[in-house]
Picture 1 (cartoon, one colour):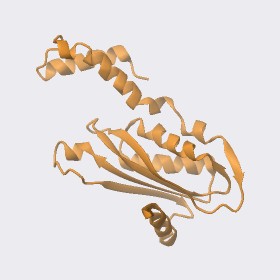
Picture 2 (cartoon, helix red, strand yellow):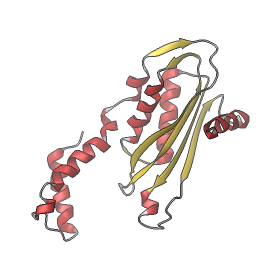
Picture 3 (tube, one colour):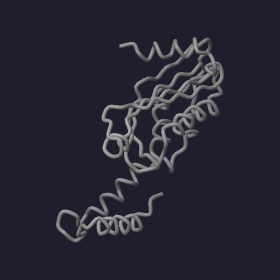
Length: 186
């Protein structure tokens, strides 16, 4: 997705704009390194959650399935600075489940894009809801945003928590509380 040559030109121009000499020894390969970095950090544009959620297994009478503490990092679309943290995904199967690693792959699909946390939380919930058709989905994301910690207000350690619920989780505070208790287990 990334046009490497265009990205290298842009990084060279940025170096010049901040008063750097892109021809000095330490910066000679920086435009290429940064272009390759953005290829990796934005690989989610070339991926689809549907691909990862297409292989399912029969699971009758399954209750809540929780995959917690899925680490992620993304780039804030406002400042293109990293935000990172953990995603917790709970769903109530409707006769079928997906391999647990596939939930982490879904997180990566949406985290590897320029993003805002609120949107990413909803995208993960929608993808699981649309592809697995479960009885309910709850996604909780906890993240630290470097646009708040290294610039602007500079509040290191502050975290943003977002959640998105579908189906049986929507408005069911008792069920949501149960999942939050499971997340807190050591």
